[in-house]
Length: 94
Image (cartoon, rainbow, N blue to C red; front, side):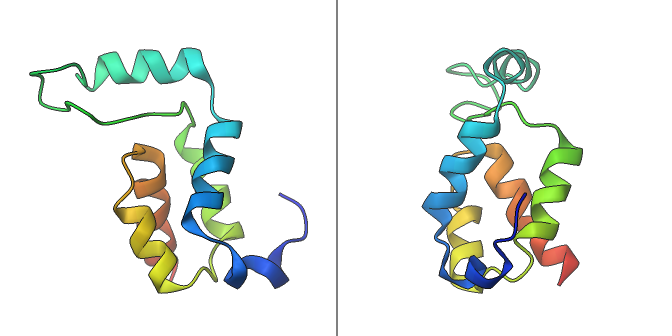
């Protein structure tokens, strides 16, 4: 995850979402989207996955623990499932 602790407060939710996309696994994302029924008319319609596992997201939560609340709020509004989970895990750590 590198040494980015000093610049975490300058990060934006959009930057983190881009990082999540870059770290994601497309094949895993497709499988998870089928599992969570995200097709039109299904209960998870519109939910987007990038294909990260929960342990990976937990590591990111440790990295981004000092993220400003305004940016955490933006992550909570994301269409990306893993971004919303990341936001919740950051809040739990707080």
